[in-house]
Amino acid sequence: MIERAEGAELIASDGSRYIDGVSSLWCNVHGHRHPLIDRAVRNQLDKVAHTTMLGLSHPGAADLAARLVDIAPPGLERVFYSDSGSTATEVALKMAFQYWRQRGGQHVRRTSFVHLKGAYHGDTIGSVSVGGIPLFHSTYNPLLFKTHAAEPGDAEDLARILAQHEEEIAAVILEPLVQGAAGMLVHPPGYLQAVRQICDRHGVLLICDEVATGFGRTGTMFACEQEQVSPDFLCLAKGLTAGYMPMAATLTTDEVYEGFLGSYEDFRSFFHGHTYTGNPLACAAAIASLDVFERERTLLRLQPKIRVLQTLLSNVAEMPEVRQVRGRGFMVGIDLGDHDPALRLGHRVVLEARRRGAIIRPLGEVIVLMPPLGISQVELQKLVMITAEAIRAGYHSAYGAEPAGKTQQAQAA
Image (cartoon, rainbow, N blue to C red):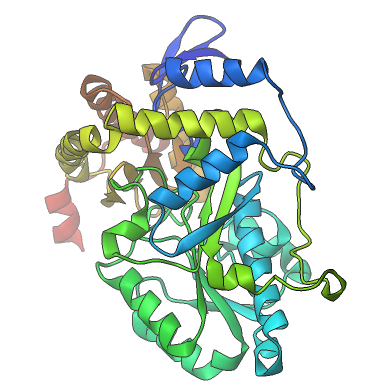
C-alpha cells in the first residue's frame, strides 16, 4: 500500500521505501513531489479545478498547446486533448479515417490501418484493433475492425503490404524506436525513416504513438527526433504531465486540420470529446513539467545516466539467467528467455526485487526497467543491483538451482 513518495522513491504505509523502477507505469518523469510541479497544481486549484472545453477554453490549454507545438517534430501545428494513451491513439485513428472520408472520391476507400506485430496502443476498441498482443487482445476479436499486421523492423514487409493494399490504407501506426509492451523490442536504425518514406510513397498517413517513448524516455524529447521523422499524428500521454494527472494529446498537421473545416451544415467537425479534456490542473502540471525540462536541463543531464545504465546492464547481460538485455535510453527490457508459464519466473523476480527495496514489473519473462529521468546515479546503481539479485533469487526459487553459465549453455546448444 503506497501512501507517499519522494523523488525516485515510493513509501508504503508501513514506512518501507522502494525505488520506483518503472516510473509508476512509465509516466513519472522528474520524480515524485517535484516542488515546481506541486506548486503549479496548487496555484491552479486557487483558480479553477475544471471547466469544459466544449465551446470554451482556458489559458492553460492554449499555453500548453503552444508549448507542445514548439517542441514537437516540424509540421505538427494542431493539438487535440483527451485523457489517456488509449484515447490519444483512438483520436488519431478516427481523425485519419474521417480525414479521408471527407476528402471524397477514391479516398473514401481508405478505411483500413497497418500496425506492427506485437503492437500495443491501448485498451479501447479502436486501439485494441491495431494491437498485436494475443494475450491482451484475442478475447475481443469479434469486436475489432480488420487491420494489416507488418513485421517489426522489416521495411520491405511494410512496403509489400502498402503496395498490395494502398488504396484501402488510411494510416500506418507504430511506436517509434521501441515497442514497449512487446517486451522492449528495439527497431533497427533507419527503420522509422524508411517507414516515413514508404508512407509518403503510397500517400498513407503515419501515426507515431509516443505515449511511452515521449518526454525523454529514449534519450531525446521524442523518439521521432532520432531519425528526423515528422509524423502526421503524434500521440502523447503518460509523461505529458510528468505522472501527475491523467491527460493526453494528439498532435497533427494543418493539412489534416483543414480537412475538417467547412460550413456548419456540412457537419465536418471531429465529433469526439471527453468530460475532462484539457483539464486545467493537468495542463498546469504539464506546463510545469516542460518548465522543469528547461530549467534543470533534464535531457542534457540524462545522457551520463544513460551511459551509466548501459555499463551496469552490460554486466546483467552476462548473467546466465539472462537471454538478452535490450532497450533505448531509459527504456530497458531484461529478457529471461522461455520458461514454463506455471513457474511465473518474471513474477518471482518482481517479488524478490520488492523484498530488496525496488518496484519493477514483468512483461511475461521480460523484466522492465524504466526509472524516472530524475533518478540519481546512486539510485540507478542500486536499482540495477537489486534487479540482478532478484533475477538470481527468482530463478533459484523457481528451479532450486543456479542456471548453467553462458559458456556451458552455448556448448550445450
